[in-house]
Length: 74
Image (tube, rainbow, N blue to C red; front, top):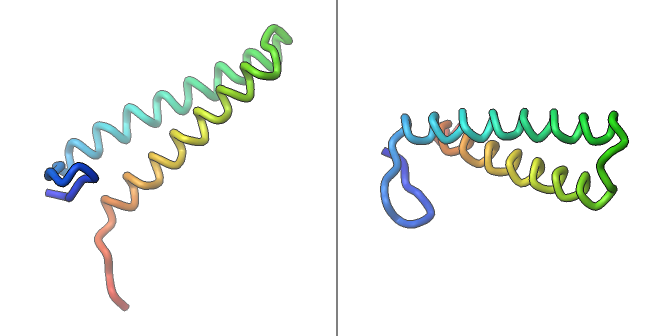
């Protein structure tokens, strides 16, 4: 079990499931951004909002991946 920000314990499986969901959402956002840019339909503000969301997802993915790797003191 791994600690969470709320103080409770989160299982490794829960983190793996959350990671999978975040990765799917990240890919979906990538496709949505590409479609807006390629199609010329999206305005700059909408594209910027989607890109910010994508970056937040990437940060959360990295944090969860780090939580899965045990701290090893060299």
